[in-house]
Image (cartoon, rainbow, N blue to C red; front, side):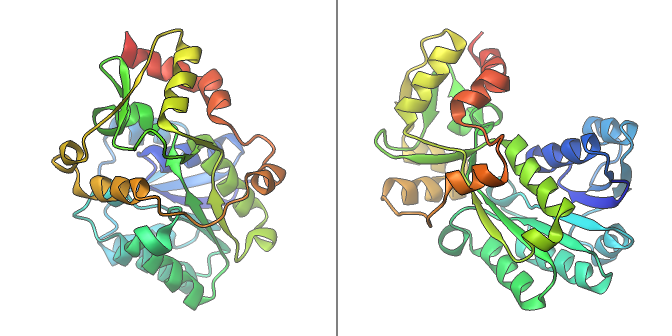
Length: 286
């Protein structure tokens, strides 16, 4: 491709997956990070990424990062960083995309943003008002969260523990699939301009997820529901999210078959476990 794409959050889960996919596909990437000396930033630099040190709270840094790019992948941390103003940063990036004539923006929001993620919804509406070429991705829960967030909503102490009621069906997407849809949108902006995609690769109840993990790892991994107040003491926004899930609030309709038509490699939870998830989760079970 040899075209330059800015990837925000490249040292995090989503941005990291996107950066890896774009580099593998032959894109040039630029990353914006708070710490250019960090291990992940240095690894990306070694892989060919241009690194800019700064924060999304600084408009000048955003302008410097966006200027000269073909595309931008914009993602913000949400409940993991409650002190950050993700609405302001997301809108500033979209403004810079318009100002600097960027060909295409991919904004990673969240499934159900219009009802459960007001800051992300605010950014979505701003992008629509600007009229720029953009694709909005709305990922569901990451399959990888069962590993990366094991202390709150994942595998720990020999069990799968979240605050979801056992009967609740949850939507999941693999990080590699978010990256795949990002790559598709950047490679074909004419097709993906104006699209909003609710990204879901599988739908499972927590006991079904625990059974799949048990089968894939060869370990007995039961499901234990975590008390909501216990989770609230760790992260208030996580707790509110699980209260909404347990209340049976329905998310907007999603079409897994249509997603699979666009991206035939879309992973189910079982596929993700076979490819990488079981190995990751065994680390927490050993």
